Image (cartoon, rainbow, N blue to C red; front, side, top):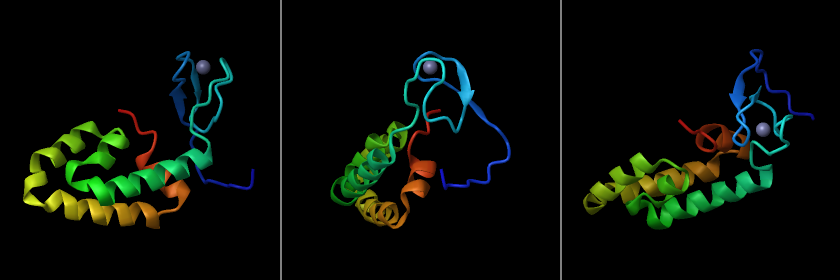
Length: 113
Ligand SMILES: [Zn+2]
């Protein structure tokens, strides 16, 4: 719609459902019709939940697990006794909240690999 993202290169990704190659910007797979990205409201929810987890349970890396960063989450768990992850979590929670929905989605959501 009115969002003009200046991505000149056309990246392709593989559909989560059927595995067909589709445009990375496609919201729905043209082959099977499965949604590739969560709708904006869901992303906003995710951002809020991640921020809350980071602030309240940051010591245990809860927000990392929530965002699918399991390895980083385990690191938080290993070092939670130092108190550092708790501090980092609060900072990260504030960062999540300071970001726009688009920024958050681009940076933290849907990054499998
Ligand atoms: Zn598909």
